[in-house]
Amino acid sequence: MGLFKRKPKAAAGNRPVPRHIAVIMDGNGRWAKKRGLPRQAGHKIGAETFRTIATYCKDIGVQYFTVYAFSTENWKRPQEEVDALMELFRKYLREAAETMFQRGVAVRVLGDLSPLPRDILELIRETGEIADTLGPDAATASLCINYGGRDEIKNAVRAIAEQVKGGALAPEDITEETIGAHLYTAHMPDPDLIIRPSGEVRISNFLLWQSAYAEYYFTDVLWPDFKTADMDAAIDAYNSRNRRFGGV
Ligand code: FPP
Image 1 (cartoon, rainbow, N blue to C red):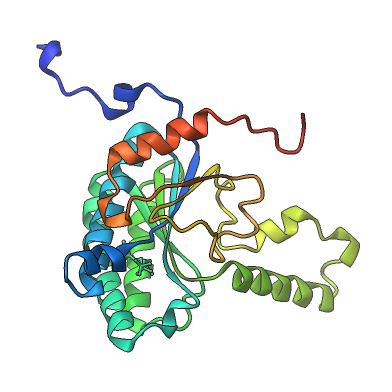
Image 2: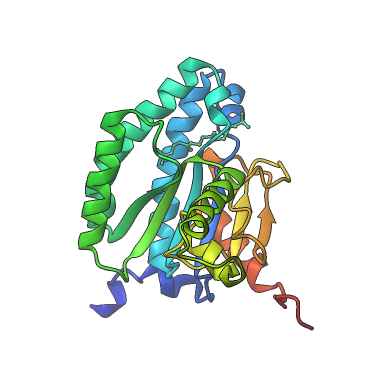
């Protein structure tokens, strides 16, 4: 009987996995263009890819999976595309609360959420409540929405400056940990591996502070085409690197 049991995916590759993987989900527009479809169609398949890869990461033992879903600069896109992305977040957050919960993945949203429509804020709050019920050790998939690395650091500096102004903190007591504790990612370790698909080779304001010692992996695959085998390839590349954190 045991012979026919589905092997857990974690045992399939037997590779050690990074604790925290982050992805810049790039290439949705080009994926759609290649097929003569509107850009939004690429984002829709990109959202499906997120669901598949986030589940796979949980299955193979990755504790944190974080993706760039909407940057502070993405508001500059045509209104139609911004609206389509907001609609996708709405639809996804409604479904995610259930399906990802069933799969044991806590979905969280990071970023400056203040300019988001009120109903999306409510969905984010509900999703967070559902994630909380999975407990603090659950695998976490975080969607960065209205996220910008510089904006995040600026907000942290402002909050710390307020504490200094109020006398609660002395400037000489500000440490790297103080800054880390004021970022959206305060509750998670820094990313070990950051993946950018679609052939672009830049960091685009993603996790600027947190990526100080991250390993980068670039691939030409467009995000909607990204498969679990591509994640395996990225993890293999990561495992072949010699991380020295500034040492020798
Ligand atoms: C970058 O590709 C992608 C984005 C700006 C949006 C990413 C959003 C999603 C994948 C969907 C939302 C996710 C969930 C889980 C609801 P691009 O549009 O810049 O592509 P291009 O460089 O080919 O034009």
